[in-house]
Length: 294
Image (cartoon, rainbow, N blue to C red; front, side, top):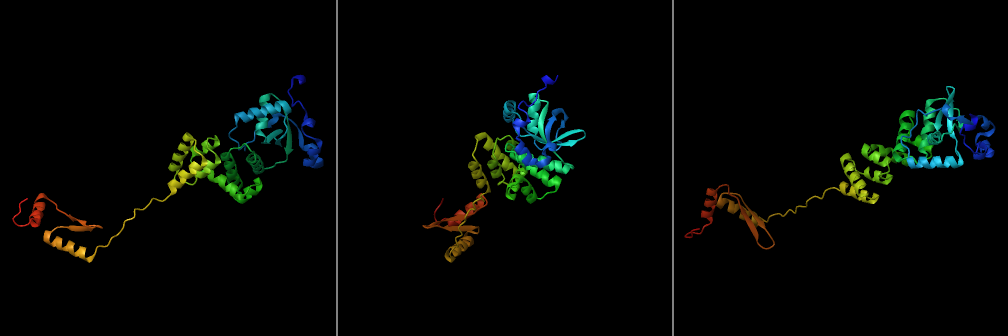
């Protein structure tokens, strides 16, 4: 039976040098580093990663099949077995390859808060983690461990502004967050969309971005256009001269109805109001010179 067991063929000594091991762990390193049986490792209950890239997983499996596990996983001892702290992808890969053991660092982690913090930070610092999962990791550190944004930034080695920008992504509608997770849009697109406060408008621009494959600059231009205040119609107030006002008043008295005069550069126009056919005939009679029929 032992001959049929699949192991990480190159051995721990070939994968991790004694010098690097001692440098990392000191004199007690041998007690904290060993090959662990895969069936004894339980999943991390605080695992923040929600999605795995199939292509990257296949590449990892091919790499392990050829060279072994270069970077050990990290576990803690619990309930006569082990609980995974970090290394979910590596553990999945060796399981799918049929191995029965994997190199692991054994850490002393006493509380679930420590476990959560280690798991979140390890995942957040991975290059292939999508922006939304990074943002959710920061959010969990703040909400569940009661950390400030400044403390989160210090723990993950980032600027506070970087943490803030990631957290702002969680204000986007769920459809846009999912699109960012799937890499349909980039972080730049998402940040540009945050420039629009209305969620409906955000979705409109996002749909157009995905359909037409708009660049980040295109999205920024759309946002600027939406945020641009509407142009006010400029009405030029022209004060009427006393002569025009007197003429209006005289016509109103003569015609017994509303009259307005609109002077122009050359000439102008007179507006006479009437409210029935009979009133129109009355006005015409007033305007008609004596002896002329119309």
